[in-house]
Image (cartoon, rainbow, N blue to C red; front, side, top):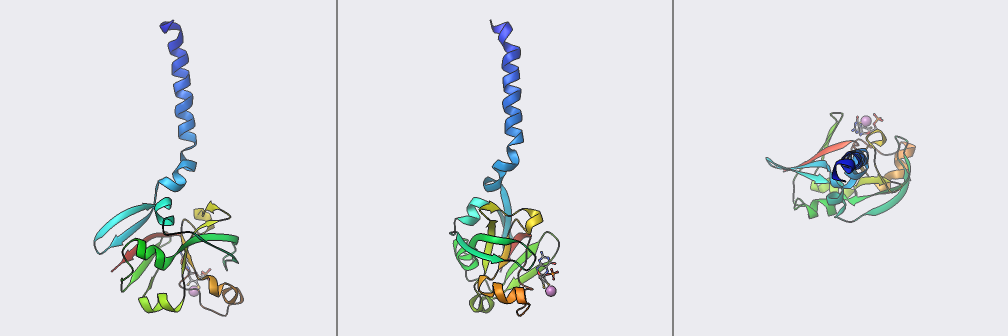
Length: 163
Ligand SMILES: Nc1nc2c(c(=O)[nH]1)N[C@H]1C(S)=C(S)[C@@H](COP(=O)(O)O)O[C@H]1N2
Ligand SMILES: [Mo]
């Protein structure tokens, strides 16, 4: 029996391994590293799950770059507090395309920034300005009309660095 069933067993094993492999990208959504947080010279990697621990908020809006619908994300200040970085004098954002911005505590008080993680419940794709982007929900309408600067609405964020 053992001799006859071992090719079958091997087949099942190969099947399961393939399924595991094929579902990898979907599973990776919330449990694989997606953001580097740097504090001085120390860096750590966070998963989507860990970023969203700060508490999700939803907002219906259209982003000036096109995406529209129900965005979800964590308030930047809640995220910084969860990471022990609320006192940072400068919070820098670095994007995959090389774009970078920073916020001072005064700027974070002036406008409430949302670190968006999802659109319509799905993690933001990298071709949908993901995996993370900064938006100012209260300025959404003005941004569409071109009445407010959106230079700090950085998308494709890969790293947040505080000092
Ligand atoms: N990752 C990333 N975010 C970005 C930018 C960018 O080039 N890359 N451009 C910024 C600037 S300067 C503005 S005005 C707005 C809109 O950029 P756009 O006019 O190039 O579309 O997005 C901001 N966020
Ligand atoms: Mo700009």
